[in-house]
Image (cartoon, rainbow, N blue to C red; front, side, top):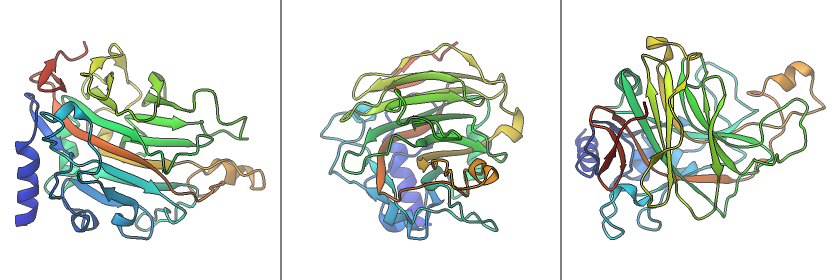
Length: 313
């Protein structure tokens, strides 16, 4: 309990934002692999394969600088980046369910006070902003012939309030892959409408903030690279296919979820069951994350370096 309190305090005092902070997922430097394996705040680490969470997720310490947006300077970083990987053991087995052999997945889920569901009730109400920064892992590249879901909010019905994708969309049969925009980061709505896309350039931190109005069911996207402050890249967009109220609330995931390619040797029903069937190569692949937090828009939207900008309206 004491360690959890210390970690939470270390995260809270380091915030360079003037808006009400709901959740801070920026890993403090005293967060350890043991903490990760035990699903201590700020992460629930159960969505993975059969190995310990630390087999799939690496805490980088001072070996790599996180996105610079939230640190006073390069010499005073407030967080350590996290590399999240998949390999051929990354088959998740939900409680009381079948192994998800079609997927390879490792994800961290936002939690606070050891309770991700209680966090959802606070974070998924009013108008809130979900921040995340993403960096390519050059030594463990993704296979852009596949579709990857890398950031999303998932209610109990399995849909996504929004998601960030990479790669080539899953199709039956598999078409010509990789598609032309496979190396673009794509932000999609609940209905999978494309809201924004940008090239996934190497060596760059790609900073996102997604504004969600949980009452009026709208979305807006902010984006920048590296140390550039966030700017709005969309207007206010309807997200009316999402469920209102508690039914639409869900867990905030970030990580690597790799969809299969359709296997022509399987039945039509099996090809359509992407969770349990399909082709996976089993390679080790990864992405690196930092700058994960959730805020209210009461005081505006954090753009970086303590700068506050207006919400999208």
